[in-house]
Length: 203
Ligand SMILES: Cc1cc2nc3c(=O)[nH]c(=O)nc-3n(C[C@H](O)[C@H](O)[C@H](O)COP(=O)(O)O)c2cc1C
Image (tube, rainbow, N blue to C red; front, side, top):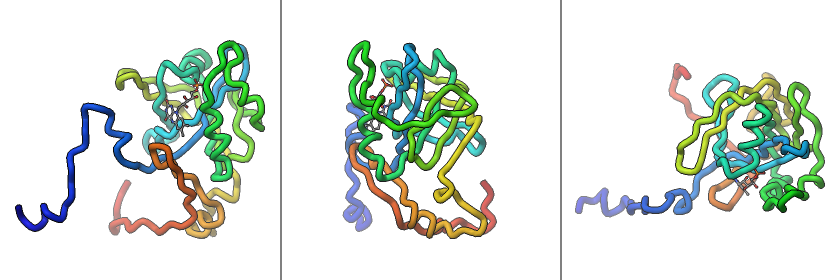
């Protein structure tokens, strides 16, 4: 065995089961807002979330088992709220099991405010909010599907937004962000460094 392989410490990960529970990865955490068939609000936490490219498209992984998926199929819209670190608990409570006809009663206790361009609600005190029109859903990832939307309106807590005269490092320090450390942990990020991009890099 050569020297590098003795220090590498790489072991095989079991792919006969989902790999994702065997290590940590860093993810965003959002609440997807949709309207149930009876007109009541549904909010559901999602961490498998991503910008869909450089333009105004947003995507997240869901499953047809969740009301979020059928609500979007029916209404053609959804909202995205990005919680602050102080909202981890209510974000988690939004994953409470449904109670038959009563849906998710815990959502009635959430403070929300309405979207403007679409029918929907955001959580009060989040830091970033998107109104999305359903763009396309791609199924077939096992039991999961990728739901994408076009961001038609967006709002943010001004103190979390980037400003030309602002210092990005200070913004994150004074307005920390949540990182979901899948599976099952979270961190509050209040320190960061500028990324060391190569000179003249193009996106
Ligand atoms: C921290 C956290 C992250 C989650 N991330 C996802 C996710 O990315 N995709 C997903 O389908 N479900 C995810 N879930 C589970 C659902 O959001 C949850 O089952 C929810 O209650 C479904 O609600 P619905 O039936 O009203 O859509 C997550 C749950 C938690 C607590």
